Image (cartoon, rainbow, N blue to C red; front, side, top):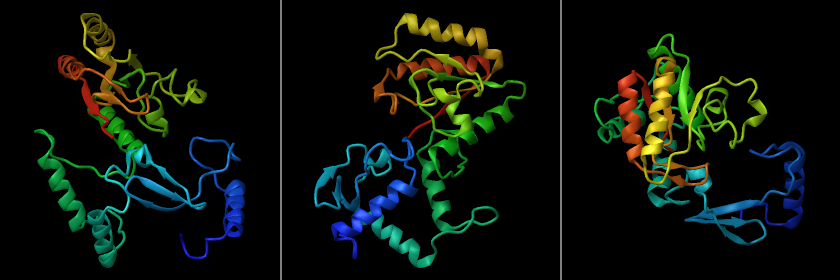
Length: 248
C-alpha cells in the first residue's frame, strides 16, 4: 500500500478526482464505470486499493511481458536514474541508446542496420509511413490487412481495419488505402490469388505494405500462416513496394 493512501477516505477522494479530471484511454468522459485503483504490482499480479489481487492478462497492453518488479529490469532503471533520467536525443547520444541499437542490429536480418528510436508504437508507424512515402515518390497509398491494428495517431489509424477497427468515426477524413482480406490460418490458392490481384491492380501506387507479422494482436490474437509473409515479400519485391513489419 502506498503511504498515505491506505484509508477508504483517501481513495474515495482520489477516485472522485479521477472521475472529474482524468480521461482514460478508449473510454468516454466521464468514464462509464469506476476505474480499478492499483497500489502495487509484482509478477503477473496487480494489487488493488481494496486489498484484492488480479492477474494482468494483457501485460499492460504487452508492455510488461517480463512481469512487474522484475529484479534485473528494476536494477537497470535504478542504475540509469543514478546517472541521468533523460536527455533529448537530437544532437546528443548516450551509452544506453548506442548499446540498445547495437543489440537490435545484431538480431535483425541484413541489410537492416539502422535504428530509429520512437516513444510509442503509433509513432513508429508514423515514421515508417513517412519514410516509405519519401522513398517512393509519386506513390501515396499503402496496403494493409483487414483485422489489423497499427495505432491511434492520424496516419496509423488510416492503415487499421477500416470497418472492424476502432476508428470508424474518422473514416471519412482518413487517407484511403488498399486493404487485403484477413490472412487465413493456412495459406491457400484463393488467398494467394487475392493478394496477387491486389498488387497487380494497385502495385504502381503503393509505397509500402504494412502488417503485423504472423499474429494480429488487437484484432483478436489472430495467428496466420507465416507463408503469407513469404508471399507478401515476393509480391512487394516484384512491384517495388516496401514491406513494414509492425511487430509489437
